[in-house]
Length: 334
Image (cartoon, rainbow, N blue to C red; front, side):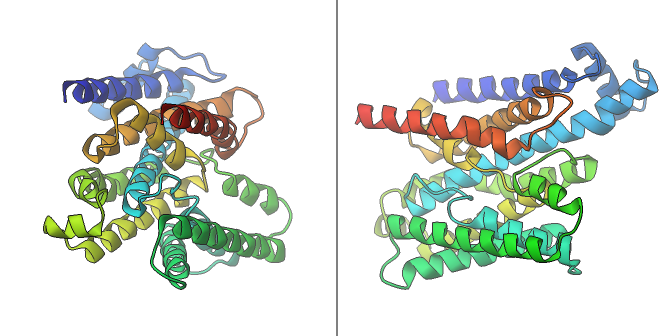
């Protein structure tokens, strides 16, 4: 237990340090003291030590974007850990089960077709429909199994991605192609305080209760009968957890686009360090996911300056080989 508390304190401190240092990185010359001076001035109503231009870079541009990255990374890693526990399949994540593609389809429908629905609501609706389709398809030919669930998720994800491409091909014109493509690849370039607020509120309202569901998820690890014998209403709890995962994914995808590998890789990496217990795995995965996406987004915006990569490309370039290494290490350990 002491090791887990130490890990939580270390990751929490690393997240705060990562956010602070990431704000200083970019074409404008800023120090850690400049960042904290500007932040404290805005929080207390005092006078910023920076001139108007540099203060705007900190408060209006970089800080909300980096806070959004931290919240999105934390949420995606958390949902990935929950999905893997609920389905008892360590390949499950929001992307593989079709949630991200469904949320993207809902969001693109609002952006391109001008449907009169709020973007987060459309993204959640798309994620929820994709989840229902995945579970419905997986259970159509027999009992719900982990392998069948993942295969159904791949099919639903591909179908939703094809529908999204069709909508874009049929309706988008001019430069909107480039803008929407960047969003589909995952981008935090447009994240400001409204996006940071949406991601932060989603983590507070949905993410925190999910983090506290570790005891229930530990019971699921021994099968539905064992969970039921402990007094857990299995079917209702499973749907509540999956629905909460879809809601959180929809809210995050609405502000960041579709970002893969965070929900798949980070829970595996944390599980290797602290073991399979979900009560520790969920909050530590969230902290690790926040740190990972802060640095992935910083790399995306600063490494090729003045060009900027969609952050989804960076997470895939890092996540795919890391996931392969984790699989090899896991097989060697077995």
